[in-house]
Length: 81
Image (cartoon, rainbow, N blue to C red; front, top):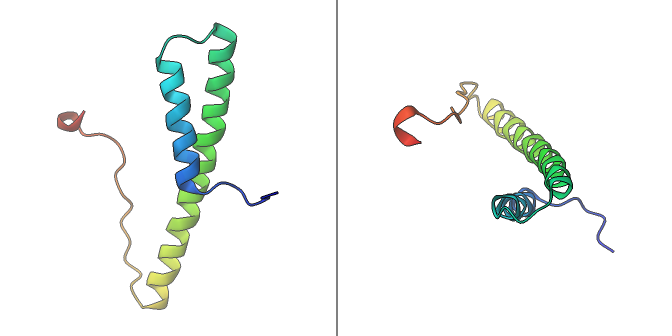
């Protein structure tokens, strides 16, 4: 039995599958709510892993004397929606 938590790519795949299921319109209201709750949990896990990866990059940059860091702007721009 694998007790290792899913990696980022596996979590994203689960989230994409969940979203497709919800977008199909075939879920009942209760199933949609459960899917939404699971989606929130998956999103939080993804965010935690991204934060950990960001911290690792910052640590590596500091070790090399590159303390300059600019966070990515993940918000869509008006022309890119």
